[in-house]
Image (cartoon, rainbow, N blue to C red):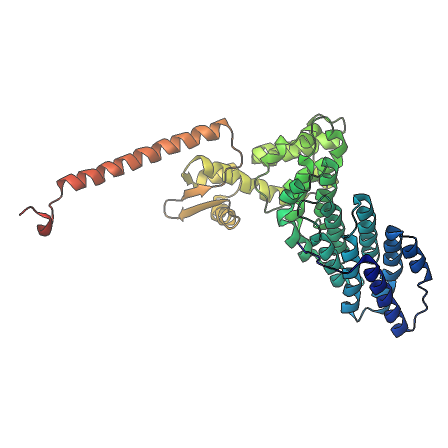
Length: 401
């Protein structure tokens, strides 16, 4: 947090601010009049003075003084110092908003400096101050509008804990999550998807109807994102569940298709495609891409159920030629769906580990069985060690004399 320690009086700060602007305007040969500022100060209309000078001079500073970052930053540092001498929260809100709006008006003009000034404004408030939410929102939007996406990406790592600290409303959460999701929608789709999920998590059964468009979008993304192999979490979201019973046919079909990719296998997809041959193109999906992904998912399911899988079984499950099995296994390994070794001589895939697409009662049972085997193996190993301790011949120097 930036801490402003300034022993100057408000009157001195006002005069410094006006003098700073006068000097800059003279240097640039720009017409100016400080009479209105002085009247506002004389009438002790501090908020109006700050609002006026910020809205009037920001445009001048970033257009006429764009080669002097020091002068621009100095102007805003004095503004922030005065801002934190105000005691009325409403007045602080008004001036803070004026700063945000003025800096956001032309986002591509000297965007790095504007981001720095907004960051200073953000850091000038206590970590748990509700003021930080609106400043952060403006900061993220400014960075996005000026194509500083890496800055946004760096800033959002702690966003959930920050939102808790700021005690924001559900609507504020939704607004920020949706903004971040839209920012990365084109260039970093996986990150965009993650924040769209966060956005949808804020909806309950009662207000899920409001989020139908975004619920459809998240379902389509879960299928189209080739690096996303686990999507059963969507089935727990009320906003997504609402699609299942939707009176809009496309919405319910989208839900059905998403569920196939989340929990089912190739055969279910082929049946869906046979019943709805033109549906994929209407929602922007490709049958070839979908086949590629559902085959990999089906392979993950198969290899999670048994540790030794014959090539012939994989060929049958994926409906491919047996000579293509190794290629599909290698593709699955490259996508971190499974870890395995190919026994080409015996035409068997020896599975070390495989992605568990869903985790329900049968998976708990399977895990329990594996733990029992591991427990038995460890118990036997400990017994072997104990037997070795009691039966081995002691070295000469350990024998009793």
